[in-house]
Image (cartoon, rainbow, N blue to C red; front, side, top):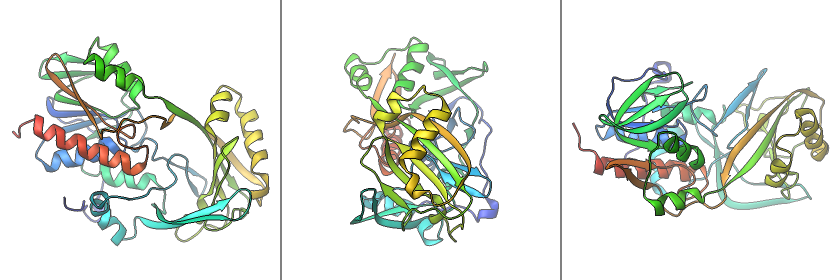
Length: 351
């Protein structure tokens, strides 16, 4: 499988208009799995349309600006353990869009935990990777799917605004409970054994606190700290991830799964105060601005071993993919999308 390459950066743009219906494959979700699948399907000559409810692409590969700072508030880095994913991203390592960040981080109790596993980042924000993957892919953002139904060309995807998108094959990449809810809303049933397996997938929650500072943080190089897990699991200084490094600290604080669950509905000011209290010795400067982000489906607890799951309803194919299939990592989502595309190419003949 060849590396993905794009036009010069000045020529890149994100398409946000829907192609004429019906398409070969309609993909719900413009996260990594959906975007990777879309690129491979297009390369194989299949027409695609990607719908996402968010204001941008990437899902949990998310970055946010706070003044001059750019903070990653979802995935903090990624690892690459397979030649397949390394080869696909090779061009973006060559031009510096993606870089190695570190091989281990400081421990909250003192010292460092170092290993030989490279952690990679997009220095200008992790969402850059999603935007690159979306270039040239027909993506419609800000579109919330209400239900999916069989009929017509195969599948009819109904949005909350009343629009209907038709496709021969459906690929669902949101968190699995959301995908199952879309099928239920359209009164669609899949194989009972598969439905039970999907219904058993659970997710951890994560509350993320973002903060820009009035000066450098006290987070030790290379810019992150592993905690014991509760109430904080992770602290990163995004300023140290940037290239060149920013002078003022820009912190991402990830609460642990238990704290996040127990404090999910607590007022923002309470959660903010408690999380700052847990990391106070690493602040190093006064807080300029703070924001909270709540991830209901942060990480699958019990992902399925398969890279994707192929099912059908009324004889119409539906495929499930995402980081709940094959491994709850960024690379897992990439490989799941590629596996889904491979399965769909076998199911959907080229025009």
